[in-house]
Length: 126
Image 1 (tube, rainbow, N blue to C red):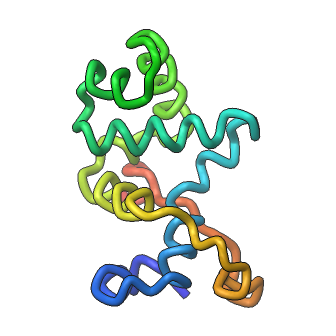
Image 2 (spheres, rainbow, N blue to C red):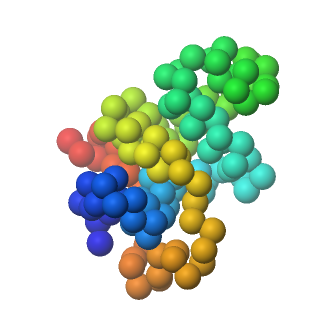
């Protein structure tokens, strides 16, 4: 199932299963980061989206130095590529980061639902 086709269902009904699938798909680039840094990068991405790129506000929210924010943003840019420049992709990322992941394993996506898909880059869409 293509989760983005069900985006309206996710938003309106807050379907945890679809939201988990969407989260897997859109946060897949973080899988390429070292396991120890994934949560930190995820929180930095969330802060960047919430603060509309204001590095001072991000540093305050994350309790880190501005240079640390700058470094992490560079790493996120390497991982996500042009997706961070696309307003639609940023909106989807904000949606999946707004709520914490579903901790209930019974409600997690099943393997039959297919593998997580990475969002297409601008180049792939053209």
